[in-house]
Amino acid sequence: MGLKERAFRRSLWIYHFNASSCNACEIEILAAISPRFDPERLGVKLVGSPRHADILLVAGPCNRMVAPILKKIYEQMPEPKIVVAVGTCACGKGVWHDSYAIVGVDEVIPVDVYIHGCPPRPHIIAAGLAQAAKLLEEKAARLAKR
Ligand code: SF4
Image (cartoon, rainbow, N blue to C red; front, side, top):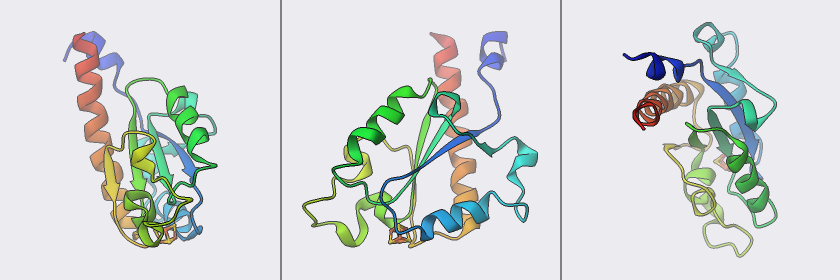
């Protein structure tokens, strides 16, 4: 691994965004990053600004009012970045699939990892984050070759 490629390696810093979810996905996300699973020992932690984040974790179906905010948050994140949709609503609008008010997360920003479930269990979220870490590493390697 070259120096430039190594420079892109990092711990997973996550920015979590609630795109109008019912909050049950949030509870499972918090459980996934709590001391029981303790992902912080692997460098995984929540950050308060998208400018510091590698991963954007989105839960909820994304309504029309929230869509421009979600897009702006995505644009503020530095490359390489990965978007993870958590829950059936974020993955495919869920029960809101035919609602006029819902646009869907992947119609606003590109989604890399889909974690299904209503809500998904914490260990499923942890597995999704591991997949996101792998994708992030691949993206970083591609960027380093430019
Ligand atoms: S997927 Fe289920 S738990 Fe998650 S926001 Fe939608 S309705 Fe709530």
